[in-house]
Length: 233
Image 1 (cartoon, helix red, strand yellow):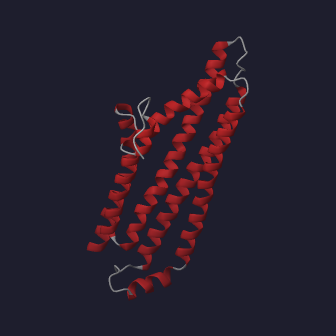
Image 2 (cartoon, rainbow, N blue to C red; image 1 turned 90 degrees about the vertical axis):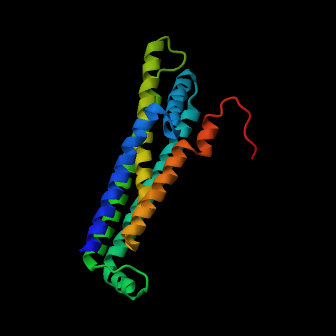
Image 3 (cartoon, rainbow, N blue to C red; image 1 turned 180 degrees about the vertical axis):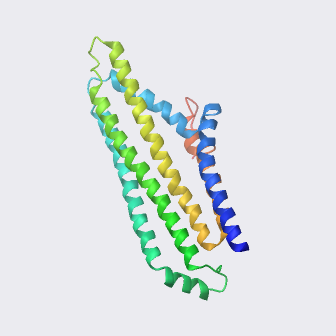
């Protein structure tokens, strides 16, 4: 009974950490913009520059690159779902293996299957996020194509079109970030297979890693460098 209580508490802490971090990051970006928020601002700069260009081959090429990256992660999520399904079909072998290991936690068939199904659900969530992000990047490409040319006398229409394209691109990036965060937290979730205390530890470690990447990374330093001299390599 105590073991199941610890597992339930660890799972609850994981869900609170995952969903709470997503809400916290949005609040924090309003107070102190991190990497994603600053890059969203650059998306607006990009689309404003796009609207001033007569030839927009570079803009469609960048959008295609973003789509390809999103498609890669969507495919990887599907492969991960298949891998988790394979583990689920091998439940009896895994439970028997854990029973023979000297330091492995004892685990029942039902608990192992629940953990595996939960892992599949995380990968499924990531896939739908990446799939929707891919579709939104398609929409963004269409909006780029619908932006009036730089020679158009209707400046207001061109500016509105650029804002629409920037907004669609930003939403696509947000869904991509949600999917990527799900993959990051899936690594924390793997700790649950080694026990609830390892689960809590891996959850804390993943939160520290993704927080540092948003607010204390060299990528953020590069983005906020401005006109200053670059730091030594």
